[in-house]
Image (cartoon, rainbow over all chains, first blue to last red):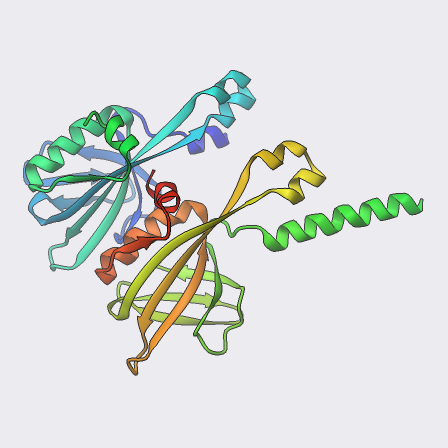
Length: 140
Length: 155
């Protein structure tokens, strides 16, 4: 159970890890919608978030690696030799009232590259990679 | 019989010591120290980041508020140590892993314009979000005390 709870998001899933958006609880799972060319949208059962691309002031990408302890205990100790990575995109932006806001989103491994490209293209801001490893992992 | 009692006492002491020096978890934070009057050092409490205007620390022993607009500096650092207590009581393998404590130092001006500062210990899983919130609302960027600290938060 702890393994499931701590598992990285997959596929089209995303997670609002936390930030200044008080209307959405921390660690809320949902989906990121990139269809709207004006705003990035996060939808979930607990609340929605819309970030206008032109109001984005910063984009950061980082990742966190950890051992697969849960899988190792439940399935095979060999799992300890591989690492699971979580991928985080931190977006700084101004809301409709012009107030600075920040949101940390966990995204799935397969969506990192397209999300970063979309964010950069539509916002006109460059992604800051939090480490060389993160940059490499994003294919840059 | 006396040996058993001694061993039991030692185990209890080690476990107690481990609890005392354990890092904060979840939503807990600890006021490590600083210039806040009438608040004892090493006071455990909670940090309210829901309020849009100010950061609020509350505990049974007192608290403080820091308006985001008055923040002048933010620093993040960490301290790593071996899990000696767990190693003695449970398994020596614990010596191969490290426990890390995460510290956020906030410099700010009080209502009279006097510089103040607090050091807060935050839980490992909360560092990234807390830093994002405080950076967004204060308009200040966190200074990382080392590359390792930066890597630990951001990856």
